[in-house]
Length: 611
Ligand code: ADP
Ligand code: MG
View 1 (spheres, rainbow, N blue to C red):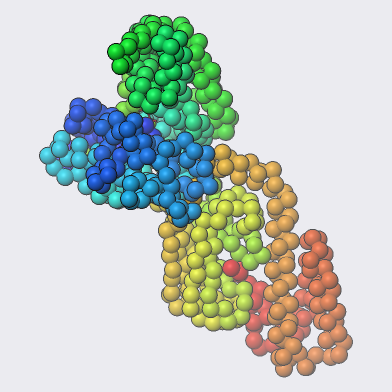
View 2 (view 1 turned 90 degrees about the vertical axis):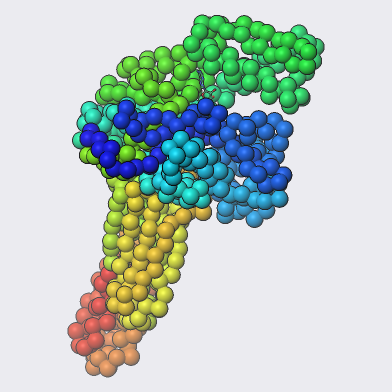
């Protein structure tokens, strides 16, 4: 790795976490975390909107969770780029309200104003930007931000939006596991398989990356969106509440402040217990005292079911990645909860490799983002990061069939161009329907966007040339452009799906496509045959008004009528061979007619895939 610090670069790396966020930068000694005003490196991802409109972020906002829960937002990352339907269960856990009209974009009602999830995330980003600016004494206009590897288009776009709202140019979104691997300099080993185990506050992610010639590729991801340190806290809290009820004869669970204070106490005990074999849970509250010793052995016994819940996703991830356990060369530990010794030993047992724990697990993603920022600034050379698209992308063609332009698992950035044509004579507008998924038919895929390419030159069906171009940038965001080759008219959209997919849904879509591949293919062929039949039937209908038609003998015309009728009879049957046979029969019956016609419209109409 060449480092050239003459390149002026205040490009920072940001880990925008569910629980905590951090900002880091690269100096001569390597990547480093920027401390906040209070000296804390971690900024809790909590935002509170005060009655006067003032925005409070981080540790002070976390304090307000207690007194102003309905105007204080935490874990907003769970809502980024998601639709209302996606997060129904999620929303039940939140104390704040959702504003009416949130069907397409969620709006949180906080006091008099509403905020979208990217706006809330932007508050956290703005705080991190300010911390960095204070530290450098200079402006920080650009950043690299990390996202979970399973984030889809919409979630990535929402993260980019958050950056823009915060006044940051987001140079790149980097996958969290890739960033963690970079922080450990694993790219230097050039080739290998890396597993990244990330157990944070509320989420668990496992990713398997392939490193080839210094380039990372995500082979598979898995995890649990509701598993992490919070579960351990809740477990200890329940026990402590029972103790208190017994000792004080008082049910503290209905006392908000009391519960919050006790929660703080169990979290402290939990975190200490990662370093010492025994510690105390201590609470002094309203003149009363509670103290209980907790030893590592008991703690380990209590949390074993939680730790075990991470192992299933790990095994599935290994399987999905198509590797065996002994092919995994390196394991990287990420997330504050991986400091727990039991977690470390469980991971070591499963992967049979000594995991990397040299860096702070809650800092490692931000550190890697800073390495990536330095690469982009030109300070560090010879590295390239690549990711892959989780699902195929394509457009709808006639008959409700999908034409895939970019296939699943293509490395990004990626682009593809294909030519299409019109299906109807004199067609002025073409609907471009962008879909995502592995299935052959549009009805089984997910609709991402629709737009019209308007005012194309009216021409016979099949004559127009419409070029459709898909471009996925390095952040995984899709841009679709359709262009009428004759007039040069074009229309383009950045695809922002109205709501996102969970990784389970992605997996399910892939699974289904494998199971239904044969059936889909057959159905697709039938539909395509029907489109072909439509084309030739329309052309014949038109030819009946042509002079050439009247030059045919009576027998020749009768043969055409017969072939048309027979084709119409089998048109709706799900019998591909029969449809094709009748199309061929009609083709033969009209051969002389077609040849006689100077106008090539009949034959010309048969060319090209129609949109
Ligand atoms: P996220 O990626 O979800 O934003 P972090 O990686 O910052 O979260 O992890 C936060 C979680 O790590 C919290 O549940 C916190 O209590 C836990 N944690 C931090 N330090 C320790 C420790 N020493 N021992 C056990 N858990 C810890
Ligand atoms: Mg994290």
